[in-house]
Length: 194
Image 1 (tube, helix red, strand yellow):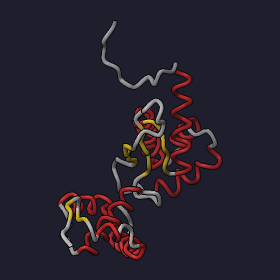
Image 2: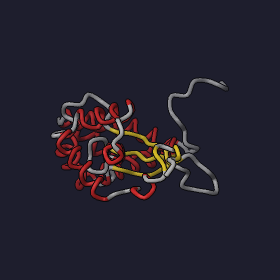
Image 3: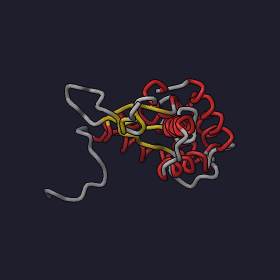
Image 4: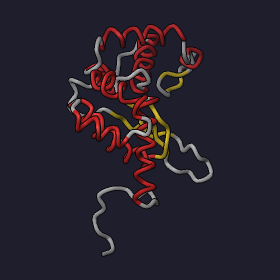
């Protein structure tokens, strides 16, 4: 039957190859907490990772066996998954991962690329980008936009010691003076007269 509803992306692979690919991506995500891949692969791996972390929060024998069947090196990663990661997301119902679109990594094929990362972790890119934006706004004496305020709320909401850690990151970023020479000439894309 042509044109029927598809429940998942096939990723141009047969079933066994697709499952192996997703297991490998999820294993790398748990190990590194951030991976760079194509956007369709990231979205499919996100589904598997979300379910795996939900199982890890239950922390019973059944969930441990399921996790052991998904992870390629379970003896290394099970303590991290059922310990550090399960504790990090204990108060969060869902939304443990984030997919951020990036420029295509392969310039030849122009395949859409993305970063799949665990939220509220040490490699949380939105946390760092929001801290840099707040530091820049403070340096220029500008008000924060509604989007920036919304992002501050999102990145600090479930993080332990969220606002204190965020302020620490803002101070670190401000000390780096990123883009200070460009701030003298432009403000949010508008040329200044000097």
